[in-house]
Each structure stands twice: as structure tokens, then as C-alpha cells.
Image 1: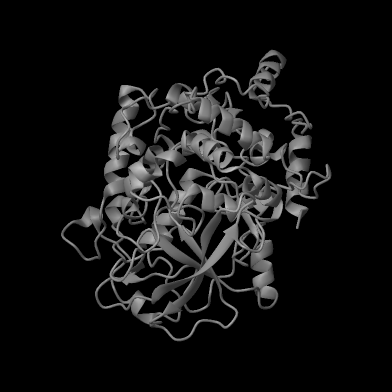
Image 2: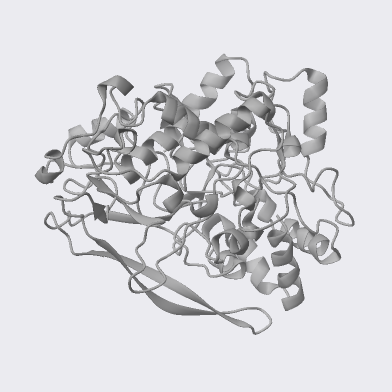
Length: 502
């Protein structure tokens, strides 16, 4: 399980980037700057007042606009005028609705044949968090099911060894698509049912959690494999992704402790994945299981899997169609020779990537509120900051100059953690097993209601508020969850108030 991590560490050692317990040595910093970075990013012990620059979670890129439903859709504050043009063009493409081919709108055709949404914005509503279906007639556009099966035989084992993250379900591919272009049948529909699970807290308060169960109905291409593994995914918010990409890999891997050698019960590990951009094994950072190493790779995978649009990076004009879905291969692909051998050529992928890299993080609210400060102390005291690492300084060598050497506060270690039976999907993905999830960033989480119109959290939206989300934590987070459950109502409210301020 830890073979790839070992290889990764060896690669760093060979390159002269020794990983140390104090945060590691970074090749982009002088000894003086390294000491400064280690001092600035050290966990605070003073909860009587805000830390310096805490109200600027994205450093100079922090958005200082009035908070409203569009607050996640502004560009990073430090972009140049020329970059703003790139950002706005990328925004137009992110909002674009693709159509099936052939079409008179040749620059917009190529949709499907099977798809989950017609555009990126349909899932990432206002660049925020997706939601569960609200009832009959509400299509699960911003939520879908990942599909895979265990390896069967040497060919599957070889594929995984070569870098495949999963073995797709033979008839339905890597995810369930509930829409299709004319002449093709949609694959089926996701069905969700909930059962109530009451939880009694230390002060006698009873909170009812909703436990989901997932299945598939109306299958159009025969039965699924009996050993199919289903994993629901809600579209995550989009802010600050480029800054997360700029966090040095050394700083992330230095926090990994896959065998819990220090005995603290926390055993985060990186997900090493085959990156389509470089063709090499790299540190996964994006997606619920850190299955993508770069925003460009994540964008190309989403084009192919979610919309059925090919790109030069993932050139699958038939999207996620399988050999069992013969009707998929009848329509024209929509590829245009004059634009290159893909439906979304490099200029499109470049702009969507740039847009996704530069959605700004809003300024913190209420950082000096006594309740927020008390909640911050409770957050640290409960051990939440062990995985939700508060702050980093980005690399001086980051791809985008405006992302370089910024003090950022994402509250994530970008590592995989065992979250226990309650949140397990029992579906491995790359180095992530069926119990592990990447620690999600917390910046902007308190604005979910403002932007997305709901307060549903976790990978499948089962938690209807932040308290429920905390109480679902298990595995490595069990002690933190139990600490929260043992708090008084006032202490719990303060902790939630702090998280809402992020």
C-alpha cells in the first residue's frame, strides 16, 4: 500500500530535497526564507486575538468584494489586466452549454453521447458546492455515482500497476451518466434512500444524522457487475485551486505518516497518481480522493467523463461509452479538423484551466469575534487542525507568478485519511482505499448557504449542517469527533462559528 509513497520519498531524496519532521527543506527557498516560512506557518498557541494576516486566506489574491451569491466567482485580486481577460474568457467557456453534433454552432458541439451535465457551471453552481437531489423531478446534475469493479485477472492487475486509478464497470464505465443525446439511451438513474441515526451528545442533546443508501434504477444496457462499487460524489467548490496547486509537494509529503510512526492516531498519506499532463507519477491534490495531480488534468477528466467532450489531454470523443453501448458510436463525434483532433482543443482547455486556477478566496469574516476566537481554540484543542492544516506559504517557483510566495489559509493537509466505517464507500481509487478521503479545504465553507443555497456537506451531501458533518467523522478523526460531542452546547456553537468564519 505504501510502495508508491516510498518511491516518491526516494525521488525527493535523490533530488536533494530532504523531508524533515519540521516541515522539510524546500528547494525554492533560501535558508533565511525557509526559517521565516517555518516560523510563520507554525501552529498558533495564542487564541486571544487573530493571527497576523488571518483575514486574508489567499494572501494578496484574497477577494475583498461585498459578500453575496456571486462571491465565489470573482478572480484572484492580484491578477493583471491581461490575466483578467483570460479569466473572463475562461469563465465564458466554463458557463458554456455544449450541444450534440452535428450542429450549426460548430464551436459548441460534441456533447456526449452520454453525459452528466451540459456545462461545467451546471455542476459547480456559481463555482460553489453541488447538492443532493431535493426530491422528485430534481435531476442529480451536481451529484453523480462513480463506478468501478475489483481487478479480475492479470490484465486488470497490470492496468492498475501501470497507473490506472480504477477498473471501470464493464458495461457502464467509470461513472453513471443519467443523460444522453438524441438517439442514445441514458445509462440509468441514481437512487438514494435515507435512514435516521440519532446521536446523543455529552450534554444530552440528540442530533439525528441521515445515513444514505445508494442504488441504480432504469438501467438501459443490461445489469451491472455483481461486484460493482458505487461512490457518490457532490461537485466541490472551486475557489483557491491554483493556490493549492502552488503548495510545495515537500510541505505536503512531510506531513504524511502512513504507518502512524508517531502514535498519534493520524496516519495521512499522499495519493500518488499518473498525471496525464506530465505522464509521470505525481502527488494527487484534487478531487474527493486526491485523484488528480493538476487542475489541467482534473479539467480534462471532467470534460471527458462529465460532459463527453474530448480534449488533447484526454482524447475520448465518445466520453465514457463502453463496447456494450453500441448506440454511442453511431453519432458523429463533433471533432473539427480545423480546430485540431478534439472537441475542446488546447485554447479551450487552457482558458478553462486558467479560470479554475484563479477563482479567488473571499476575505475572512469576524476573525476578532470572541466567539470565533473561542471556537478556534476549541478547533485546535479537539485536534481538528491535525488534518485541517491551517496555513502554508506557496512556492516561489509556482507556475503563475501571482500565486508565488503567498501565505494562505486553506485548512487542509491534502492527504488521505481513514474516515471510518460511517463514511467509507468501499471503493479504492489509486492509492486511496475504500475508507480514505482527502482532507477537504475549509476556506469559504461558511459561505455555502450564501452561494449554493444550502448547507449540505461531505462527499455525498449527507450532512445537513456543519455539526452533522463533524459527527460523521470516524477512523483517524474519531477522537476529534468525540471531543466535539463531549463539549457543552456553547462550546460546540463556538467551534461551528469559527468554521463558518473561514
